[in-house]
Length: 418
Image: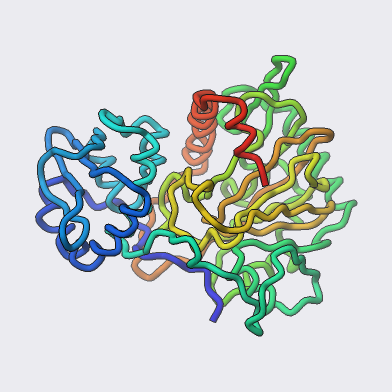
């Protein structure tokens, strides 16, 4: 059976939990079951003990003779302050340590931010039982047991079971010639019109600044509402068959409702804002144990290569429980995925991926995808399209500030290396 369903808890409203009830009622069973494995992960990363200060109460996670232990009170070498609501979201994986810090809901009062972000895989090991990544624990085999060719692409006539096996092993796909150049030209024309009509702070677009100091739209949210040509293509069997490659049940984003697709224009010479995003997982802000793996599809409106912002992936990283900023610590292959116009890339929502900054030519791509079908116990909080769009737009500001705070251009450049 080929599956990419890693969900460990239902997707529903966060159940309130405060530090007292966490220590007394929620943590003990999980510490007994997962504490030893979590300790191994904390030791391998060299993480300090952690104290979470939550509205006047404190919880400390520290080493014991048998594993990680949870107790009331302070004393951790790393101290982080957060509100009761954020603490509950952290417990239930509605937000990650990275997401809480990045959006200003967690304040590191002693220690380093990277240490708090590094606690994420250990925290999830402790609470969800998913072991953090160990080097050498992931390899790649084809259906016959031979080494997997990670640079392989697939056409319409290839065996769906073989395609699904590759996706399960590697966490990504390159599907050749799904759409024609003429179909992509129609989508590109619609993207031109949407970009021309976009305005700064409209809540429906992301913007980036070029070397001339001009701010230009880089991403159109809800692009499916702006492109009839795209909606037609997303309704074809050529596209919907992507949901059938594994044994999981997926639900396609409805092209005629909600913000099902985003149109990206990756320009040359961008120096600020979100245009090209360095290594990340799409679940880095939180929610892996509730939603992963969804399938994110990139429709190549133009071709993409090393000179104009191709996609890069870390093969197998969807199977690795790592920190959001842990790409340098993961011993897995980095694979470029060059595409021709009309090709489609697929990556699991927790596959590490990036796109290089274009050097000689622009790149255009549309992102949409599929989510795992709800579990029987799911009762997700459904946000209206306008609220979701505003949340996505606000992420632009958070990421822009994060990029601006990075210490050196050389560090930024290294984050785009394959």
